[in-house]
Length: 195
Length: 330
Image 1 (tube, each protein chain N blue to C red):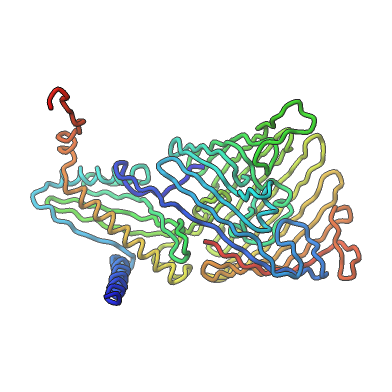
Image 2: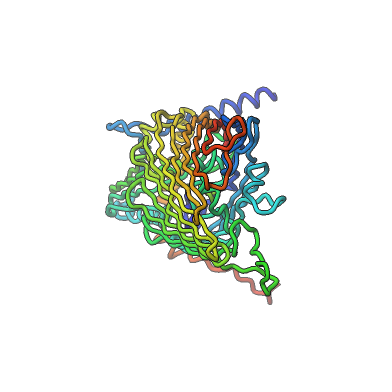
């Protein structure tokens, strides 16, 4: 039984790691991309567009550059990576990306691409900060990063894309305009004269 | 400066970074060609000995807008870089992001002045410059940093009356039982071009003196980086001082090997003599370990207040040493 559990953990761990990497595909320009199309039957483009804008503002806050209109949104932002080699977890770099969302009646699609890795270095204050002038597009990072290190960043990129996708889909399932009107939370009231 | 958390999440569902553990350990072997340790700059001083630097252990955490950093060190490098034995503190401060552009920090922090730092994991050369050795290591105080844009920011703060002290000092003969927080510090950070950052630093106080410092680095190509440090220090009450300049060209020749030269000219004021030092180092990465083989040649004037000796023990004006260090950073 013990051996079976160990084997199961190893197999699942391998599958999870493999799954993160396989989430990224190459587009027609040989650039890494995470691409999804989502059907929303019966929902208008106008409504989906408002929801997508709401998601972008809510999820990325000030950490974004946004362009586009209600039916085509592009956001440039970043997430931080953590060291894949060292045993102690700390920030090792950041990956900037572009999230694109396109809206149509009854469906929308989104993709993350233009991944650029910027390594971090430790500064005198114990902070990990971007190394100035060392940006590298993810497709060419193999020239400058250790293979295992790059694999770690690819895994983290896949996992991040999956997380953004899940949050976007979850957000787009709810009409937040109606929700905000209907669900203005009131504190629970108790009438103490009643037992 | 404002600390970038890389936060991912909404205001309703914040994701703060985890508790971060970081640090390094380092060890080295050095041989001065005279057979005697000559070069007096900080750290890595022991002759023909497999010696240790320090164990450096830091933790940090940020929750919302508030953060702290605590960094402890143990070993000879620590003993030479902290003011009070037994304290083992390299950094201990708290900070708060008032806005995305405005940050307040207070505590005991590595100095904002200079190019080189105490941790070998954050330096290219293992041996250190005369500018570093003679400048401040740490300043305890309170500072505010405002980012005007992603290209310009300004830090200003007040610090204890002396450098490298956990507490302010009572000066000899002062009619008080407490020290004071009388050193003013400021740092203007500018990014003139992509890959180029420059810091103009000022630390001035009636007890600690005045140091004006320029520290800049420019990643000119993917492989070539050029750094520069220039500083002038005037001790209080006309007590002399120093000035100097150091140039740091570095060339990456592969993913794991970078070569670098430090060329430094340093002079003490009031006829205290000068020294010129050339340090040729390589950084060879092997995972988390960096090997640093290094050869260094220092040539001084007769008035420079350090005695170099040759292999016969006779006074000389030059010293050459070879050093190899291993630094594990995590």
